Image (cartoon, rainbow, N blue to C red; front, side, top):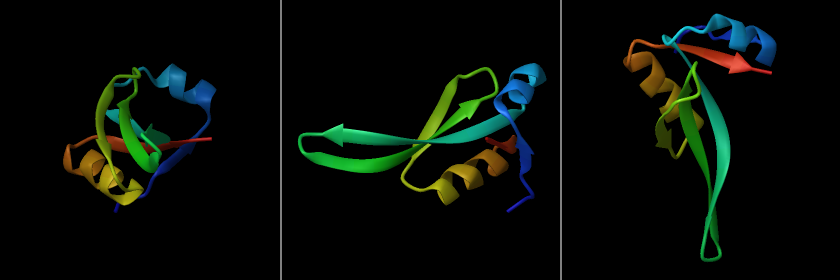
Length: 72
């Protein structure tokens, strides 16, 4: 996988670039069952997809021609 950029939330908002995407870990709960869901979001906050692993989410970002960034 490619080298990820490291940035903070303020820097991310300044990008305004739709070619950037990030992964957010979320907890999915339904009827006493919970699992981690790794959602992929575009730079503008649009939800693009959800995966069952962080690795799959990052791979999808890269395969789609987007640039993966980490938010801290």
